[in-house]
Figure 1: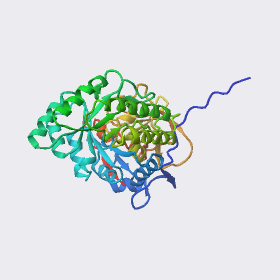
Figure 2: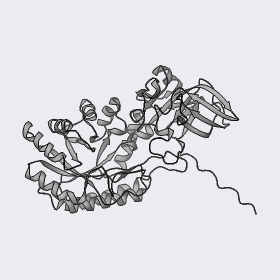
Figure 3: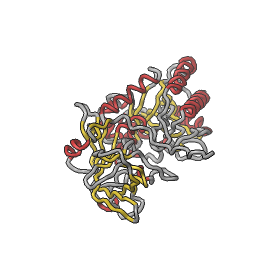
Figure 4: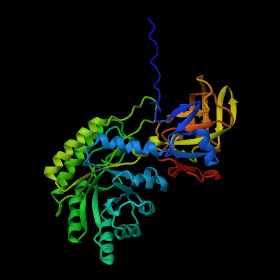
Length: 417
């Protein structure tokens, strides 16, 4: 008996976008917009487009799935476009920044300083001083930061608001990037936290709590739940060394989105139940602590697309190449050069969609390097010169995470629809 080959895994359906009359449709603030109409409105390719309705919908889905007591913070490093940050600031409970530059964007967007937290290794002395002056919460990542904050507090007459970012002794299993466990540049090793808490109390710093972030881009709900439970237990133990009650407990995020064939969307139900159990425990064990979940990619990643235009169609030794006016200089992650060990294709579409027939295509950019690759031998509709290529799942770590100056091509445009 012949055993049929196993079916190849396929991308999760990009059902957040509709296709009408062969063209992609993007949900906008004032109604749906056809892709080619949007391209004409933008005026040139390449560009990123982010959908307000999809951003609003994702926040609403999280509100419905998680306990009401849990605060949602947007980690703006995922997408720091000022219009996106301003829009998100009106939807979520707080903003997490990772530089003084991001802090300025968050403040300009109208975010409440009381609900802004500043994380990241290597904070420069002027950045720490700016944080104190702005009244935001600093997630302390090293012992060096504490005396700098103490001096700024004395000079400005403002107590520095601090939380200790903890490098836990465990990792988030199944995460794309591990942010804790083992040697890390992020946070203070658990064994240093008592010393840091003692210094903060001695110098009159306003200690508020802990920040624990074990990893990111995880699609396994059970792993996220385990990390949240371990993070809570660790914070509870460390709280015994604090002179004042914990007011702030950031359990990180790690919620992933499906990028590659075979991946499916994260199930929020068990995460919501797990967080409810943590909230109920905290009511008795850390009654003043506000529980925070910090998310970036999960908020914005699926709400954005990258759009580039085919400028040439070539056939080299039987292989179709669609050469576009943008590539890794704008969408580094989709090229496979931003964290992938083995390159995999993002979901990609070609519009207008003329037929359901597919051909094996290489979608490449205009750069003089074989690394400039958006789709590798991918089964795609036949593409012609002038067609628009869409890379889905592009709302996070796109324009700001890509080497736009490389080889001197024009910068990418970003629009919030």
